[in-house]
Image (cartoon, rainbow, N blue to C red; front, side, top):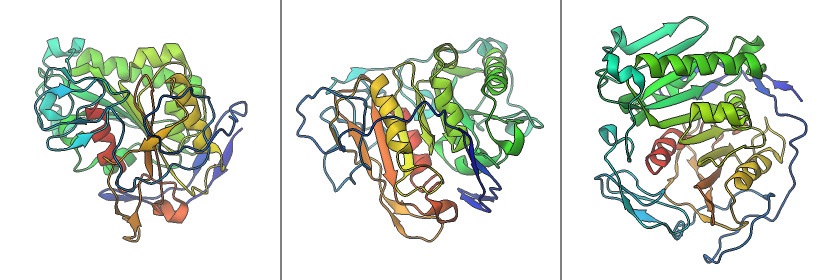
Length: 364
């Protein structure tokens, strides 16, 4: 079912971009069931259903999952643990720490797999950018030299926004300084990701071109998206062959809608608790699809590594409202926040969003 809505302005990190339309294009068959409301657990294993109820509880200073790993830099990860220097990031299922090779520039950890393009040693493009009008932008960190594999981010813009949206959102972040970033553009009406077949063909071609011609780390490819772009991202995960082609290490959709997730996928799912551009059950049903794919229990714990922040819109205090589900095969985190950003809709990328994404990806 396609539902369109119009918003006049969107406030992003480092830039202001107007949003003239934001599309909701979730499939009608994915309505999902409302299960038990997530509650903090005492760490006891429980069998999980597919339903999720209610909004996540706020952190309240409690410890994350039983698999929490304290990281002080270096190149280690605890199963899915790890984290930035001097921080603690929650693992899952209590996995024991395992040694890993250091990631590029400290942005990620674990073994690196150079793309075919690394053999070409292609220099950093002029101004650090390759841009094809109405098709794509590829942004390169200043440290890119064509021989050292960099983590790779695919970022899908919201409806009514140009693909430069994510350039503004990522400005000054770890993504800008340490990742090669592919920003595809849709040519669908209203800049909305409506035609899956046309859009996935474009994305896969652009992805393959980056791997063939530039030096990226194919073991550390991540996906993010906002609104209609988040829906496209989750829709990709519902198509197993396409998801395997892109080989995401983890994803972070912001304000998507439910699609069946075809394979286990580490996820930091972000939505506004009172997002008025989505149906009341949209977030919990979207998270339920990830929980099913990731074989999570019904129970959860507060996830405290994501810190509160001040809204860029009105400087109000934002509660990330994050939980991590128990006994998942891969980390499954849901942050249901109260940031009024995006013209008081709670539909935007919240003030903690970009930092939490890069921190989460570093744990994988």
